[in-house]
Length: 244
Image 1 (cartoon, rainbow, N blue to C red):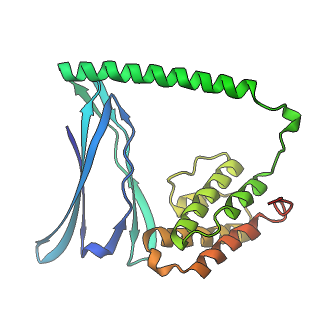
Image 2 (tube, rainbow, N blue to C red):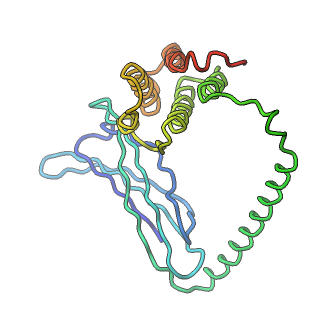
Image 3 (tube, rainbow, N blue to C red):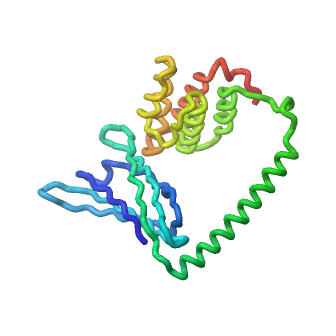
């Protein structure tokens, strides 16, 4: 079974930079492989670009199945802005085949093994967990500073990619909201409790991270380090007592 997504826009290929797709959440299906294809065509004297993605899927068992939503992130080189859109959820029905039944049995066996290993691991951690009073507690700011310190030595793109992940995790803990896969504008709109000065710094940091993700050639080592430093300064004074 093939799940196809087709993107079409007027203009040349380099108008939009599209991030590599992450596989959707699948129920009663598994991914065999993916294929993408880029083509150009003309319609009513206008040049168009078409990008086609094919996800080849196989069923695990008979009965209902579901293809979850898929987020497509893109960067507009003309406006220097990034955004995303989400595909709808699709429900399908898998008919009975002997191959599907065999795969389902192997799937159940694998799940049972994983559940057993997970139980053993939880039990081991529980009996080896230190007493609560011996676990040092750090503020959210200290935890974020410790993570950004570990980014040292990476190239600009990896540095800012890691920084954005740390920043989003920090804001999620601060606000109690799910900000993963949100655009920069959506993240900023969720920060109603932040002062305008802090929101402006966060906006600058997030936009630099977006540029590094979609156009890494324009980001130098000095700019990447300055962006990390800007975020670290925002965490002070709450995190300045961090012991490296």
